[in-house]
Image 1 (cartoon, helix red, strand yellow):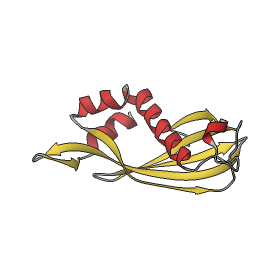
Image 2: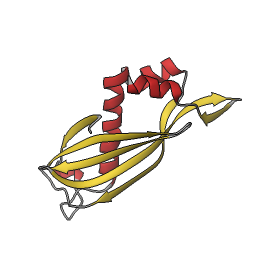
Image 3: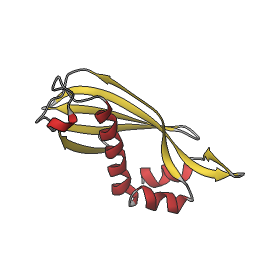
Length: 134
């Protein structure tokens, strides 16, 4: 099931000297897909954080398995397919495709950062989950 998707045209500047996408760019595209999801569901990152009294929805970890090279001129479609919720962290699962062929699978774990006792901490996700699932 696709929760949100985005498509990116790969350009020469996205590639390394071998002509393959330089791997950090995949993580930038995952981030852009996530922020597009927030924009569609809740008016964007800034609006959502203001509503929730949060400092940000930040990355805790990111991982990806690359199956097939992606090159200049490819249209890379990224689907956010699943969100696994814990009390203070949530994991987003993504799949990237070029011409209906899976080229990578990845995930990000994020937290809602709030100020508690003068320190930034991972906050409770129940309100964020309610907003993003409805």
